[in-house]
Image (cartoon, rainbow, N blue to C red):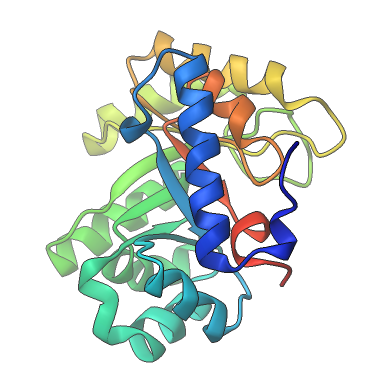
Length: 227
């Protein structure tokens, strides 16, 4: 019987999630060590973050640059060097310099103007974060991302104009649709373009995402609790 994670401590939840990741990887005949568990720390209280750190968690995903600056540049600044920080929310061009300074990975590259801003920020800081392209996999008006049909041209423009080859693709499937067809499409797109990394799958569907090729799963409430 599946355990109710809400009844467990954050450290216990982490152990269960890692077990489930390993189980999904085994089903897919993959190595669980190739899958990164990204803790989504958006709007979480400091006490929950501290519990996660105490449990040994070292990879965190943030949705907003300013919130992340406060958390990792001030509150937990003494632990920043031990961590991998990933931006998983939309990035405005006026926040690009701050994002490049703070994050190791930006998962939400979705337009050429932003690519140019990232390149400029990298030149100023001497630091280029790893980049993922966000794909609007469900072609939803309210979501950011490159439409699947426009991805080839976008990737070509990144290479031609800025000599950028992203590490992988990221998506958020439509909320009211089964995620697996969307995960399959993203996996296929990555394979077509020789991209090895896939950030897909969240608290409710990360096991499915792993079975379909996810290398990074973004888990918030199932790990850190309700916001």
